[in-house]
Length: 497
Image 1: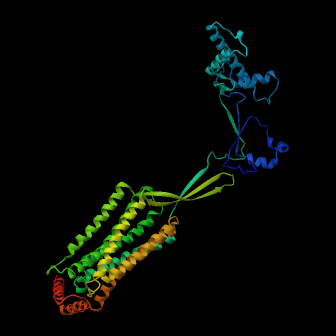
Image 2 (image 1 turned 180 degrees about the vertical axis):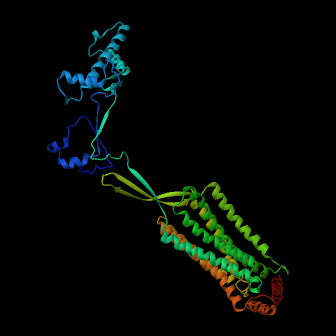
Image 3 (image 1 turned 180 degrees about the horizontal axis):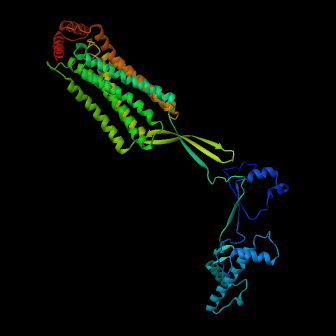
C-alpha cells in the first residue's frame, strides 16, 4: 500500500484480528518497508475489526451473569489481573451454542425414533438437523447476541481505529463552486450597455423634439421609436445575461434564463424588422405600377412588424412550453486539495448555463427565421437603391446594417462556441458583438437623419426639389415617361401625408 501510494485521508484499510501495540515496528523482517513507512501508511487510515472479548452491557447472559462478571471470574480463576487471550468469550459462547444445538437436535431425533448416540460422520441426516437447529439459535452470550446464518456467526464486531490526534473523515468532501463573471469584466460591459441605452433614449428624444421636421417626419418617426426600442432590448439582454451568470439564488436564475433569450430575439426583430418594413413601403410605392394612388400609413407598417413579431412569439412560446430553458450548472474543472491531516477535499467548479434538452434545434429554427428576415432586407435594399431621396429611403442604411449584422453575428457565434466554457471570455465576446452590432446599426440608421436636421433644421424640401431628385433617379432607369409621372404623383401623396 505504501509503495503504491494507497494511503492517506482518502483511503481506509480494514485489518481483521488482533494486533499487538506498535506491531509495525517489528514487521521489518518480512517486508521491504521501514517501520516509519508502515506507520505512515496505517496512521489515521486503519481500522482493526475483531469480536469483543466480552460484552460490557449489564444485560444478563443465558447463564445468569453479564459479560463483565464473566471476565472478572475468568481473571480470578487464572489468578491474573489481565490476559492477552482475546477469544475466551467467543470460546465460551461457542460451547454454549454447541450444547444448545445438540439439545435441540436430540429432541428432533427422538421424534423420529433416533438419537445422537447413532451419530457418525457418514450420517448426513443428523448433521443436517444439527445445522438447522444452530440457525434457529438466538440467545445473549458473553460476547453479545448470538445468532447464526448458514453456519456463520451473527454478532457484534468491535472496530478500533489507529488515530494520530484527530479523527479521519468517513468520506471525501466535495465542495461545489459556481463560477461567476468577474467584476472586472461584468461592470465595464454593464456600463457600455447602459451607455447604449442612454444613447437610444437621447436619439428618441431628438426624434420627438424634431418630429415636425420634414426629414424626420418623412422617415416615419413611429418606426424610428420601434427601432430604438429593439436596440434597448438588445442592450438589456447583455445586462441580464451578466446578472444570470453571477451569484444569485437558483430560483431567480431559473426565471432570468428565458427572459434574456426573449429580449434578444424580440429586440432584434423589432429593430431590424422596423427598418425592413420601412423599405418595404418605399418598394410598394415606387414599384407598384398597377395603382395610381397608394398611401401606406405607419399604423400599417406597425401591423406588418407585429406579424414578424408573431412568428418570434410562436417559436419562443413553443420552446418555453415544450422544452423549457433551464439554468444548468455545468462542471468544467475538478481540483483536489490535501489538508495537513491528509484528508482530501475535491473542489468542483461549475458554470451556470441556460440550456434545454434540444437547444441546438430551437436555435437553428430561430437562426433560420432571422436569416430569412435578413434576405428580405437584402432584396428590399437592392430594389430601392435608386430612390435617392435621403429623407425617405433607408436602403443604404439597411444594406450597411445587414452587412454589419451578418459579419458580427457570424463572428460572434464562432467565438462564443470556442470560448463557451471560459466564463469571462464567453460573456465578453457575446456582449461585445451584441453591443457593437446594436450601436453600429443604430448609428448607420440615425446619424444621417441627425446630420440632415443639423445642416438645415428649418428649411423644408420643396416639392420641386424632390421632383428633381426623382427625375434624376429615374434617368438611369428604363422607366417610361408615363411611369415617371406616376411615381411623381405617388411622391406627392407621401409628402402630403
